[in-house]
Image 1 (cartoon, helix red, strand yellow):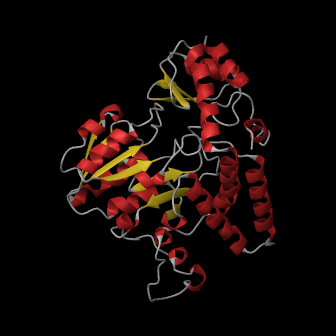
Image 2 (cartoon, helix red, strand yellow):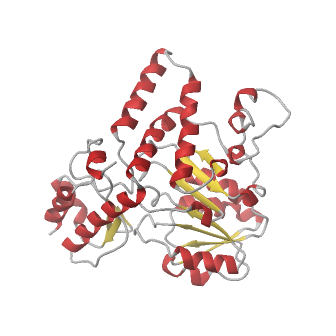
Image 3 (cartoon, helix red, strand yellow):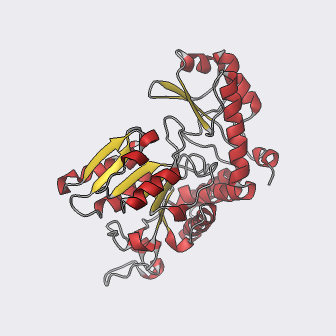
Length: 344
C-alpha cells in the first residue's frame, strides 16, 4: 500500500507531532474496536472472537520483526514483560542499562536488589564500551524515548557476545518505522501503542528458546495453557511448550484494535514508513538549522518552545527539558511547517 493511500485511513487534527507518546489509530482499527464495544454493551458476541485477535496480532508482529510465532509472547506493558526476565535472573546478576533509559526497562531490574542483582548505568552513546567482563545482562532501547538516539546495535551486540551477556532490547520507539530483526537479540520487548498505532494495553516479547528455559512463568494462567480452552480449572500444570507459556490473559479490546493497526503497518512496509518518517523529521531539523539525522524523533533545546507550539495548535512533548517532536505515517509536510512557523 502506498503512503498516500495509507494516510487516507487516518483523521488527525493538524499539528500532531507526538507519536513518541502515543500513536493514532487507522480507521480499520478504530472501526473494529467500536464494533466490539457495541457487541460487548449488549452481549451480542462471544469472547472467543475477541480472543482470536490476540493470535492474529501475534502472527503479524512476528512477521514484522522476523521472528517465529512460537517465540512471541503477548502481554500488556513493557515493564510487565521485562519483569518476567528480571525475576528469573540468578541472585547477584549484574545488569547494564543506559543512563537515559525509560524506566520500564530499568525498574524491573532494580527491584531485584534484594536478591543481590546489581544495576549500573552508562550513557547510551557509550554503552558498548561499558560492557565489561562479568556483565550478565545488557538492557537498552533500540531508540531512546527522550532523545530519539538510535542505538549502535552492532557494537553493543559484539560487546555483549564477548562478555557472554544477555541482550534485552526495548523496541517500543522503533517498531513501526525502523526495521527490526528480533533474532539478533536474546529478548525483544515492544509496547504497541506508539509507532504500531494500537490501543494502550497490548505488548509483545520475543525470546529465544534458550532464554525461555530460564524464565519462570510466574504470571501463568489459563491463557498460558497448552490449550487455553481446556485449561480453565484445576491441576495438573499444563502450560504451552512455546512462548505462549509466558502470556497473560489478554485485554480483549486492546487486541481488537491492535490487529488491524499491525496489518496496516505490514501492508505499507516498515522501510517505506521509516523513509517517510525520517524525511519529515529531517525537514523539521533543517528548518531549525540542525544537521540531518537518522531518527523519526527529534530532540532540541528551544526555550519557550512548548507554549509557542501550543498557541499554534501543535502538540508535541517536552522530555528532559528539551522539545521532543516525532513524525509518523499520518504526519504531513504541512504539520512540519506549521511547527516551524511557530518556532521560527
